Length: 282
Image (cartoon, rainbow, N blue to C red; front, side):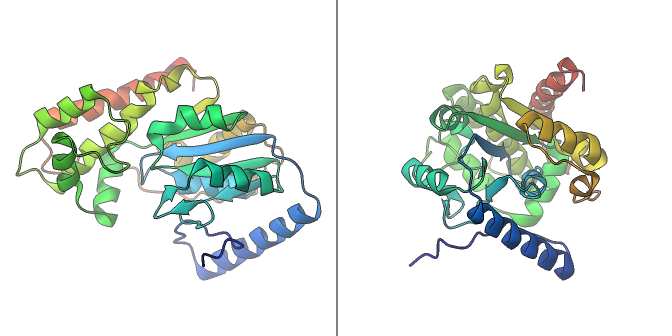
């Protein structure tokens, strides 16, 4: 049987000492919450394309005494990285001893609007990373991008990658596909079709959704984490929480073997996200 008693965090590349210290913190926090439980007053979804900084966001949210966080590696809430049925998530919410329930939603990008309506009140943090650095990171960890591109372009949308994909996006993928595409180009295409769901769900106009840029988060952690805490109404922000984030690679160099059409496609979508930041005066 699956052990549902213990939380599981996402991948942590930090030192053993740091991981032990964080583990002790989480255990102590959980004990305090169960001794003095509070009903859930806010649901938070941490969304975005893989390799875009969602683990960083989860880390700084886990640092708050008022949160309970569920990573996509947590068997209580996920199976093979996909969120379990909403009835299961509702049970976790009902059993949550903390006032803020936080859960990853990477494979569920097409369902953010529905999830927020189902678990109200809710807010979403959508992490965005420059597609060039995201691609460079993704191809080091994953493979099969071109195969998935081919399947989606031919209408095979039987998993989370194609769920919720618009006809316009599918036709675009079909028009761009070529058999000799590189894995980097396939990863860039995936960056596009996963992030375009943000605009297709009209989340840009939703005041309960905040776009968090990976580059801002790692280069200005004090400012960005404070803004996240303020957006979510979390108390207890301090410099130690922001210092959980260490400088990461921000290169903005295009990986090789990506067609000009795909470069233009990703650049245009990234500019749409950047325009949101500029409109907000960030």
